[in-house]
Amino acid sequence: MKRTEIIDALRSTVFNEPINVRGWVRSRRGNKQISFIALNDGSTIKNIQLVVDLNRFSEDQLRPVTTGSCISATGILVPSEGAGQAVEIQVSELEVYGTANPEKYPLQKKGLSMEYLRTLAHLRPRTNTFGAVFRIRHHMAMAIHTYFHQHGYYYFHTPLITESDCEGAGQMFQVTTKDLYRLRKDEQGKIDYSDDFFGKQTALTVSGQLEGELGALALGKIYTFGPTFRAENSNTPRHLAEFWMIEPEVAFIDKQDLMDIEEDFIKFCVRWALDHCQDDLAFLNQFVDKGLIERLESVVNTDFVRLTYTEGIAILEAAKQKGKKFEFPCNWGDDLSSEHERYLVEEHFGKPVIMTDYPKDIKAFYMKINDDGKTVQGTDVLFPQIGEIIGGSVREENEQKLMDEIARRQMDTTNLWWYLDTRRYGSAPHAGFGLGFERLMLFVTGMQNIRDVIPFPRTPKNAEF
Ligand code: 4AD
Ligand code: MG
Image 1 (cartoon, protein in one colour):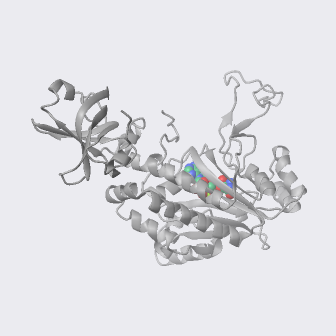
Image 2: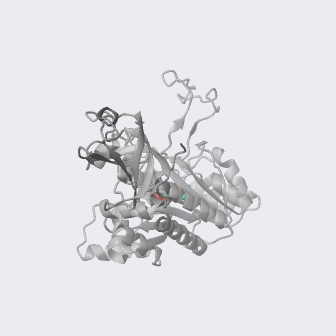
Image 3: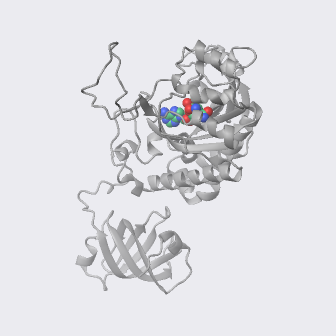
């Protein structure tokens, strides 16, 4: 018989007709006459109740039906008499696809810690929490593509293997086929990459932005959405070595337009979650983070604060005067750490902040320099619970100014000739930003650790699965 997904079975009103469902047993309880099986197939957070009449089934048939086992059940769909579900299935046929030894099955117990579940990344999608998170993750990816498609952006695929360090932070994972035990070096002791796969030193990308700019300066509006890699040795709840980033890049816009897009885009995504993930959000709101749905709604319905870095520093200064203690310094010129960002967002304003015009020395080489010569047109979005969720900027489109900045930073331009060409041939004002997909996921799910919003997290000393 054709399988019905549980999400559809639960909505069905075709009663007293045969139906077949397949999935993983969440629990089994009952007495000598009757057994109730809660079955889940991942199509929804909700289980369907299977009612098994023990006059029709032998002990032997039911023994392998334990928590975690996978079964196919055929029966009749009926309105449920019990509380908690609208329908149930009176089972006439049962087939066991795969057993799960109750002595050993690791998800037997409820209330396992997030840390422990990370060691079970191969099985944790079968829990309510992770099922909800990964369904929401899918919906957020759809939201992103929908937003850009509806607004006329083209999905532009930038390379994962590259020779340029966009952010200039030297956090790149090298890509090589060389035998690391027998590296050939030149007279100066430098590794000779000429016989390596690409004939030069290459690495995994830290951002698709530079190539994305090339796309925007031809197609007008593009976005990327792909894996991004950073060999950042920061073991925090907000950093991954492999994460997904969304990077729109738009020609002919200025800083105001850029901030408008950032705010509109992020609100669209959060609204999408509220509209498309109700059951999963309701679960997370009940069991993971009681303030979740309220927080999502408040972000959708509020205007983000827009303030300059300099104004932000003044607010932090004033807070320190009043006795607020911060772990890290925050004098003009310092990079803000997440405690500062969160103070502004959570305590001072109580809503998201778009911070602009940062000192040029704490930002990347490509940002447009303001007339003061000291600050650049960066536009980061800071979020409650998360800190920085978006990093963006207007790009320096003037060839000479860009070259001056590159020289000031003593950067090597050999690998950047193609980027500089765009400033030589038909350069145009343009701007863009990068949204960390898992940071958005943290916000939307209320989960506390970034390792729990991606199926298989990669962090320092951890690349299992
Ligand atoms: O601020 P970042 O470094 O900006 C860029 O890479 C720009 N090239 C983007 C652009 O303008 N096109 O990174 C952008 C965002 C951050 O705001 C953060 O949300 C996320 O990427 N991010 C990380 N997420 C998880 N783990 C990490 N290690 C991350 N590093 C950055
Ligand atoms: Mg940043």
